Image 1 (tube, helix red, strand yellow):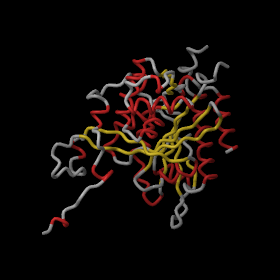
Image 2 (cartoon, chains in turn yellow, cyan; image 1 turned 60 degrees about the vertical axis):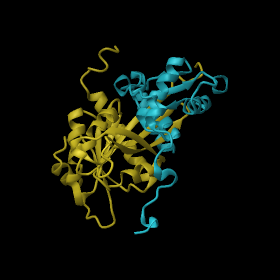
Image 3 (cartoon, rainbow over the protein chains, first blue to last red; image 1 turned 90 degrees about the horizontal axis):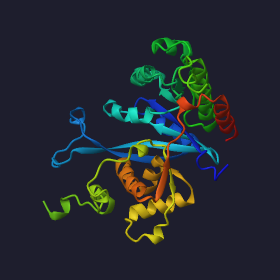
Length: 197
Length: 125
């Protein structure tokens, strides 16, 4: 093992879901959150939102994402990236999803429709994901099966409950996701392993 | 309306003193290897030996001499936008001050053992 540096493995997990569902809380429950800024060109889609009165020369906007790092070992780390909530930042998702191990779609059963875009996105990309129902105090318990049907999930996609504030609970969500990603990789038609063998 | 009614911007509210395009000397295109958020940067150069380095470039070398850091970590450490961070790193790469390695891709690791190590690591947290 020469210095061990080249052996360092960093894995990326995305945390998606509607605005205010608890993405930042979830990342913060298991890691130290740090903000990541990107300067992005403003599109017309954002024109109504990004008020530029008086600053007509402004063509870029700053998008902030949360990310956290969990060091599992000296040479193994897990990075969690909270995806920007608004639809107009889809282009950032492509960059984030690139090479990701999987994704957590955090959902609030009172506003389940908020996570449709994320579910749709990960399904189309073929990225392993699960749906984690963040249990708020006033949420009515909804059957996982009902959620699965409402979101029209593939049968293999896990739906689990969690408390985004609770470290142990979030750890379980992460473990479930890694297990699910492992199953998906194993089940994937030999496209990845064919070249390796 | 008196002068005092007008909003005043102080310190950080006024925006960065040095504009971001000045930090990158007007350039915006980073090296492809730096496009990955988890690409790992290792420092080879000693910032004290190169007086021509910008403060940001020197800061990168200082940070990465302690241990290798990811592009995302560096952007957060430097409190700079990702794009700007990448251009600063591209220069350091061109000067031969840093080495950048791509992270292992999940497509290259349906490695059950590694995933099991991640799970064990999470349980042990």
